[in-house]
Length: 166
Image 1: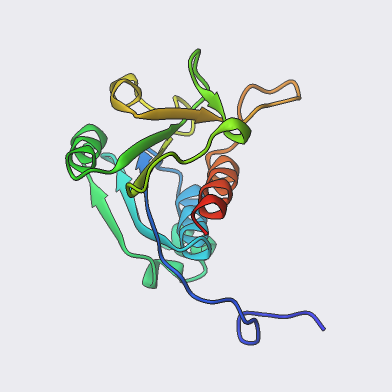
Image 2: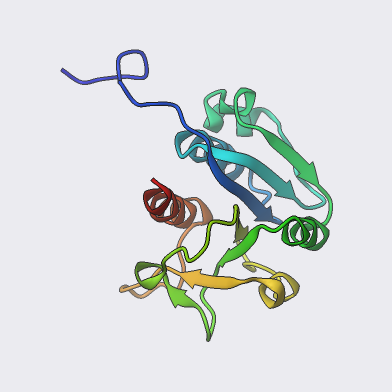
């Protein structure tokens, strides 16, 4: 018998992970980020940028998870990340760079809470955020494309991080 959210025996859990979205503004992507934040027990979702809208397109994709996920909207990603760093969060950016570590080689090395930074759909994470990150991780790509959608990449990263926290 296929199970659904009424008859599964998953234990609800909140992990010490804050998901920070750097200028992610596409409503379907934001709605999906609410869904995966709920699914992976993210402590808080922080939507950073000037044009963040929680309209009908977002709520259609989120399937009402915006009602359950602790979230905030911030104007400045840099100020948000600096504040998290000052509050002893480990800053982990998900971006392909010349010095990023493949996610399959990454292991959490301390017990600090985590701020996972994901970037804009077109431009990725800003350089100012990458410079203050403790770790930059990427997902190896084996096809012709050099990146994947922010939601799919975030799913993979949250799976790996929560797996290591269990």
